[in-house]
Image 1 (cartoon, rainbow, N blue to C red):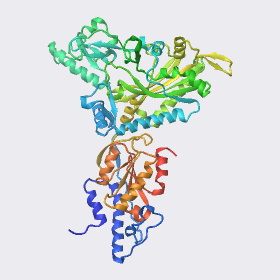
Image 2: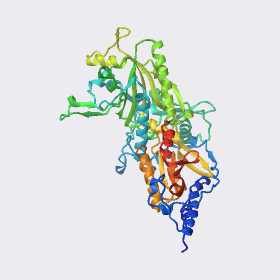
Image 3: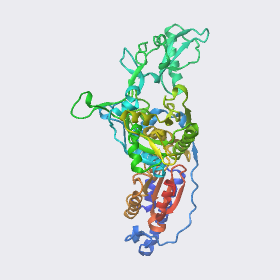
Image 4: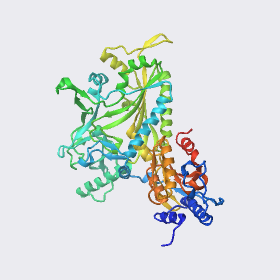
Length: 590
């Protein structure tokens, strides 16, 4: 078998998977190495490693003695985005991607799962942590008027009596009398089937909440079946006028088919309390009953006095908390959007009492700051919207509430709420506990119970929105690519370190030294298997923003590496000593 040069070996390895035109940059050093080795064989000379290259001391046989020749850098491959990719994305594809790449798994899967609960895998745990860290830095660390708190999951049960959760924290529920299945009444939508010719009603359709297109599609399928049963096949019908089951009368409910049985077997809506009950202590009677918190906000309110005294804070100021909450959802659905165990990030921002001239400017500030944060971590602006609560949709104690919405594959839904809650919560806890929760304003010499602005954001909903926002398809050099376009600041893995080949100890050693250096600050990935093009694709699919390739030129010529950008596929040559500063600027912004 003929002797293969370093360049030939590199080329042979890279034929395993097709490369884009830009990927061939990685092979330039291999051709240089071939020339260098030829020169050394001719002269038999060995040169000492330069002090500028500590990673290659003792391997002078690999140091090039020939003059560096200029090579023309190939043009980057054309990247053609697919703007229609998200509009065609289905939720099943998102769930499959999350499981396949270790982002999110169904909980207890070996026991056939447990509805409403999910486990975050290796990449998901990193993504979730990065999201929480970014939120905390933005709303706590970088502000002088907000402090942090971490309250317990189980509070004194009287907390929930005072807050109103024991009596009023419920969702409307309907039961199917035949299948015994339960549904949230406000997540089932019905519509009459009226003939277009004369408006005659021939029945009802009932579908699950989804985006408009999917709801109409399901309704048409059901209506077609009902028309056929009534010997009206082919008859045209009026457009569907959907309303949820909380708005129907008893006469209408008697005609609405259950999703479970296909027959009108649903009960009228009734309230279902969402709190998880548990027992504390050795006894299991009424005296030991407690509840897992359904929200993190009450832990802030009952600690208002403690935090005020310990932090010497002056109003306006806020208390922030990230923590788990639990709700016994009737029908958890849409993946991690609505689950029974979830995490919240909330700020309770306390302000003086007063009319619109006091609370409205503060509320508007938090609307802007909240939207700015969501954009900063990578949410697509074109997928976000606003939903202003008015009338009956506004809580009885709230002065105002505006939601930031997001267009998920299953429809537009609430992502984050920013509410002006008045002084309802502190007043309730003051009365329920008998403790004075008033604040003394040293400037005005007045005592009052502060009002509060509450920006509340679900960690899991934000993670799902970020995954959806990051989903992208394009063509690179004519080859289709599907990848996650995470913002570098929240990407689970910041960079992949790739030695060009894995069987040359000096090259691998230099790559490992760089890997361990970058690892001191960022979560990075080591990947030495397969063709360089294939490794790029693996990194792209999980959203790694930068691939750093260590090649023969690194150890023989310039002590530099090639850094490839995920989104543009463009490559730059950076000295090893400047890699950290380059990543810091790209990831952290400084």
